[in-house]
Image (cartoon, rainbow, N blue to C red):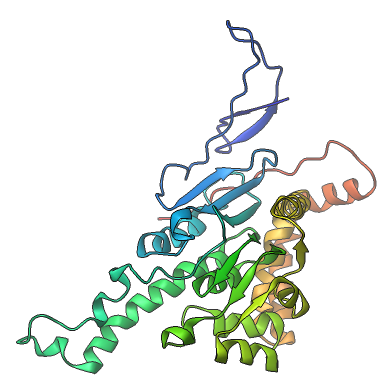
Length: 327
């Protein structure tokens, strides 16, 4: 049995303990509360109930099919800039959606997205009527929205996304930023922005082809806005596993997260950094980059511990990662 306690060296640590009975009789168990648990209104951030080094981030607007409004958009960026870097003991993030689907795209009813594009009521304000000035003013909002999703890529720990039901529009943008994508058989995907009269502008057109290749199928999906199912998503390599049911999806996602957290958090973090860097650079640049990264990472005692584990040694534990230094 496990009790979670605060520790001076790390924000959260595990300690084996015997659990005592309360005066009323039953055994009690204290469950950790994630430091970000009370910070957001559109997300649920909590420690996994069985995997101590896994943090679950859940999109939580089920009545809106988890359509992303301006508030949720900002919270996604804030959450992934913090998780895994604040001394929370997180070594892997599991991202999922509440309710009947993962994400129904952008919430088009939220006028905060389009306020800068709306006609000005002040006809005397010439700057609000000038197309170039309006365009430059709106650009900062697009960059802010892009940065919020890029936070998943820049998160220091792997992000595994478990997709069920609808994953369309901004949902695909978000999923593209995750490191590993798995889905249930009922998942439906769609790059639907062209249906709304715009080109996808927060990552799908840049990341989707690099994930699955610049194939005719990719361009067909982006040009037509047609939906594609779980089988097609797996066939083109957008997801790595398809589960028969949502329950199986949870088990498969948990299995992946658990395997990741069994390894050195230093090795996993540097692997993610190198993979993302190499995607956007030449092989030669990638080799020089990992040489620099490993010149320090190989000094970790995690290397010896990993060798001991591979030789069958039990009770090997990796130290927690320190919180990232910030001003």
